Length: 328
Length: 257
Image (cartoon, rainbow over all chains, first blue to last red; front, side):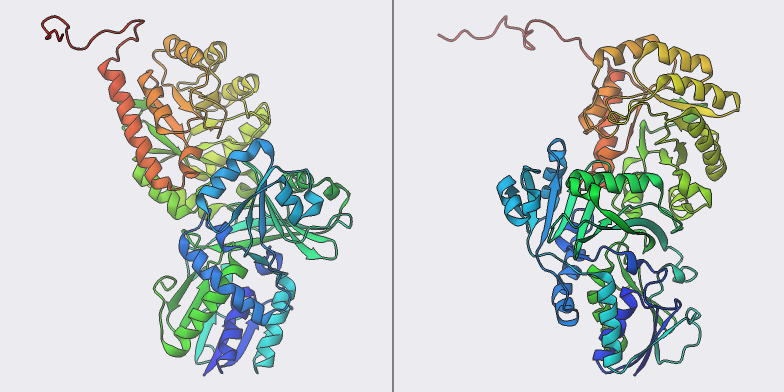
């Protein structure tokens, strides 16, 4: 079977890997000149946090995400499985209680427990939730690893190619993973803008994803290694990636500084914005239109849900199996 | 029936559209609430190149009347500009006017509010000002041309309910002919019922529904509370008394030895 995958974001590359591993002759067409470019995968947090996501997503996101750990571990050596630490400042304890009521698979920590996990946070927080089975990956390194794997299994990736949607493609099957690019066909897709920062904070050592809950400006910090941290991310109903707003940057940095003052001394290495593709229920879908299978709407669950969706896409394309939970 | 700027409205529950887990859940919540008016905030950055179009379409498709708001504005100029954008995007002269004066409590700056209301009313807007229970501010807003007032119950999103009952009752008594919509601070349906029992005309809820574990179910609960509160007001609640009054006459009951 020859398969054409359009789009080399996390959805496209995960599908390409799944298909190639199962013996398909895979060709990936990517509009940008290289991995990254304008796609939102490049600016993702890379959190594999299905149990935390349960706070605003239905249980099947947890199930999809849970499949991802083993998948990533096998295909990307850099996965760090040290859990997620969810914190709130003293006056926001209610946020933490609410988060705890709506999630599971965590343990409550006191100040000592928090300091035990992250010594640099000693004395800064009284209460926290520890989701110890969660993980994080570096999205850019992970995308590179997937691209490499596609090639290793005989696939090819062509950059700088704009493919028509659903039009005549060479492969026997076409999998479209173009995010908002597929909007002409998937008309209920919308964009949700996210803004993020990369900072270099050499004085600080955090080893796992930290989420700080706040009624207005929740923030997460994901360590990228070598003193670099990703700080994210806003959620704005907007289709334009444009640039970061001053307010968003103030809020992200303010929240990071409140997490630890060492962020005040950090250097800002990069500012990024992306637009997440989302359906009205904010849940990912596989959609068949003509001869094309669309894998889209991964919203803020790209790295979390891509493995499970790719598996289902491959099962559909190669074996005709449909999972009604994700198939529309 | 409640009329807001000459528009008859059957449901006394108005719903905000911010911070739902997803637009699909927002849609369910609006249906479950029976609300006929929803507020939507216009982020200026999203309005610029119509970048928020997709979400606004979802709001328009709810099939209810849209009351755009100027949430997050801190100055008269910002609020007026946002109102202009909102009129263009939603094709309505209604605007819920918010001018925030203080970051922590998000308390309205009533001085700037009166000024912005004066400008917008003169331009033909039908202004729903988000204000405090302050009587003088309310008078000035009415003098500026407002025909609906939206006093806070307590700070936005705080869920503390009706914080200053004395002040709110005084406001109700002082403006018997002006529709008063309790905006902000309502946390649970009993708060909403209380507002209606006191004779307020309607309540506007956002966070209490959008941040509930099951927003649609909470929206339905608020709808019942609002209906109950209104019925109770019309039924004429009893006055509290300082002593117990037996509901069954004591005369004639058996004496047990």
